[in-house]
Amino acid sequence: MAVKIAQTEEVKKFLNIVSGTTSEKGNPRTKKIVHRILTDLFNTIEEFDVQPWEFWAAIDYFNDLGQSMEAGLLTPGLGLEHFLDLRMDAEDKAAGVKQGTPRTIEGPLYVANAPLSKGSARLDDGTDKGEVLFMHGVVRDLDGKPVGGAIVDVWHANTKGFYSFFDKSQTKYNLRRRIETGPDGRYEFQTIIPAGYGCPPDGPTQRLLDQLGRHGQRPAHIHFFVSAPGHRHLTTQINIAGDKYLYDDFAFATREGLIPKIARHEDAKKMKEKELNTPFSEIEFDFTLTALAKKDAEEVVNRRRVEAA
Ligand SMILES: [Fe+2]
Figure 1 (tube, helix red, strand yellow):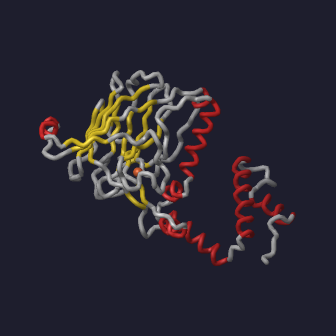
Figure 2 (tube, rainbow, N blue to C red):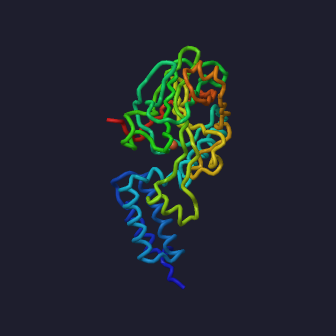
Figure 3 (tube, rainbow, N blue to C red):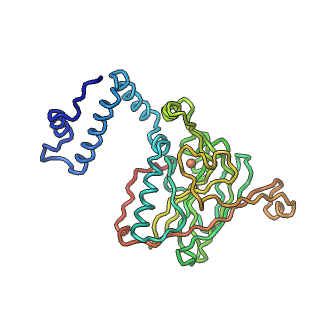
C-alpha cells in the first residue's frame, strides 16, 4: 500500500507556497486556479501511485504536444471545448436568454482576415476537383427579421481534409472567405464539399486517444463565425449529412440543428444553369443570431489568432 501524504499539513503548506498564496504579489485568480489544479494533480499522483517514469513520460508528452502544435487538437478531443459550449448553453438557459442557431466548437484552424465580399463569394481556387457545393441562406434575428451588414466568416477543409495556411500546398485563404449580407440578410457561396479528417496518426493527440481506445476522426463540416452589430458573435459549424462519423465526432461538435439537408442535382438543365457539366450539391441554411445581452456588452474576444502573412 502506497504511503499517503497529500493531505498532510506539510504538503498543504507546500502547495500554498508553490501557488503563491503566501505572497502579496501576483494575480489572485491565477493563484487560486493553480492551487486547485496542483492539489488535484498531487491527489491524482497519490491515488494512482504514479511512478516517476510515468510522470516523466507525461512531461515528454507535453513537450511533444507543444512542438507539434497540437494543444488545440487535444483540447476538443478531450471534450473540453464542448464542455465550454455546454456551460454557456446552461448559463443562457438559467438567464432566460433565447437561443438562436446552436453554438459549437471553433477548433484550432481559423485564420483571421480572409477576403471580404458582399453577398456572395467563391471559396475554392478551382484546383481541387471535389463536388461543387452551393450554400446559401439568410442571417436573421430572433424575430425572424433579416440582418443586413452581418459578416459570415466561413472556413473549411479541402477534399483531403486539410486547411489552407496550415497546409502550405494550398493557395492563401483557399476555402476561407468573409461575406457581408445585404439588407435582405442573404449570403451565398460556391465551394467544394469538404472531406472529414483525422488527427495526425503519429501525433501526440492520436497517441493519447489510442490509450483511451478512441479514434481521432471528424465528420465533414464547415465552420462559421457570424457576427453583426447588436448581436452576439456566433461560433458554429454545419455538418455534411450522411458522413460516417456524423454522430461519432472525436471533437464532439455535432449538434442537432446543425445538420442541414443536402440536395444533389444531377439534372442537366440545373447543371447548365450553374455553368457546370457535373452534378453538384446544394445546402440552404439560415443563421439566427441572438440579441446582445447586457452581460455581453463588455465581452472581449482576446483569443490569439493567426493571420495569413
Ligand atoms: Fe474543422
